[in-house]
Amino acid sequence: MRLLHISDLHAGKKLYDRISRNEDLNYALEQVVRICKEERVDLLLVAGDIFDKRNPDHGSQELIMDFLTRVNSIGLHTVLIAGNHDSYDFMRVYKHLRKLGNIHVFDRPLKNLRECIFELGELKVACLPYPDERAITHLSEDTQRSYAHKVGNYIRALAQEVHGASYKILMAHLMVEKAQITGSELQSSVSPFYAVKPESIPEEFTYVALGHVHKNQRIEGATPKVYYSGSLYQIDFSEKGMKKFVNLVILEDGLARVEPIELSLRRELFEVHIKPEDRLEEVLPKRNDVLLKIVLYMKMGDVLHHQKKEILQKELGDRLAKVEIELLEEKTLSVEERGDRPDLIDLYRDYYQKTYKTQPSKEIEELFTTLMDRAQHEAD
Image 1 (tube, rainbow, N blue to C red):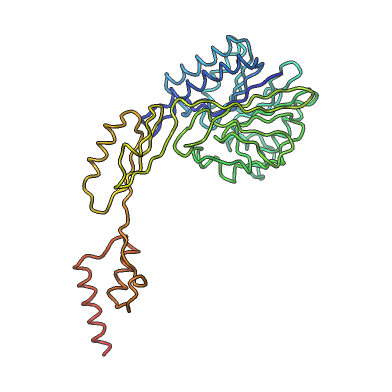
Image 2 (cartoon, one colour; image 1 turned 180 degrees about the vertical axis):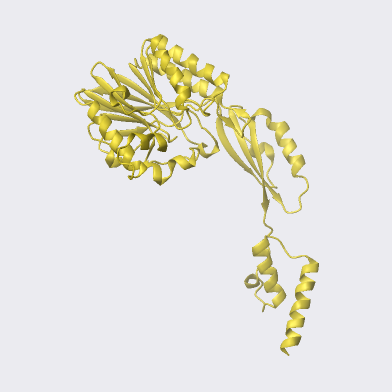
């Protein structure tokens, strides 16, 4: 049997609340459909964060529905779980797709564990949508235990429900210790408080398909093969330079063989740093299939930064995502560098420069000198 593991679609994602990433997602999903056909995939696993917002816009809903329709037309089964960005109640509506095709949606963790299992031939998939703190506390008999302990107990109970299957899969949307985060994840949800220990994942599972962390990686320290497939495109500039993958999982002879397949990107994210002496034509990428964040270094007192931003906007057009201005510190010789015996005004200038990142004005220096003269006079 052949599985394809994907996650973290984030339909409706916008960079800086204005640049839609749906064309980047659609480009990735077209590749997913092609891979499903070419690799003769039997089951598609979508491990959460289908949408970026809990109440997604109509265009994002249409994009996901079109994708699911295309996958369903191939004849394979699709299993989806909700992520922390997805609304339990919103995803519940998608459960009705099962009546129309081979699309199976698990919207929330349930007390009746049998309702969390998808079965296909000799395969069973235990599904754990994102267990928010309220949901997992409601399902736990021991309310005094930590969040991670409760989730670990729930996973062990799920493992019992897939007992007897030739291939046992866990699909979950959660944080596991030792996972390398990218910085684009919701920071509160990847804190150590929410992290499940790798060794708490039961060895009975043949493969564990995770969503939540955006980097494709295998988790060390777990007995079964535990993988994050990662996001399908570079979500924001914290993922710049990062390659994207989906995981093809081949089940045979009681084992899982994992083959990550790299995706091409519709628009790659680049961060370009421009110094005052740089020529734009030499430092800007010539490619059109990019989104750029420009860090523009300016000298103190340079009043032309607005004009430079306008030039960049005109030159780059839709490729420009953001311009950040960074002020350069003007180097001033320290007392040690001057090599002479310091006097108090020199020491004060050094202190002022280090504290306020600029030199004191003439008026401040005169006030400092007056105060020092008065102190010296009183000491005498």
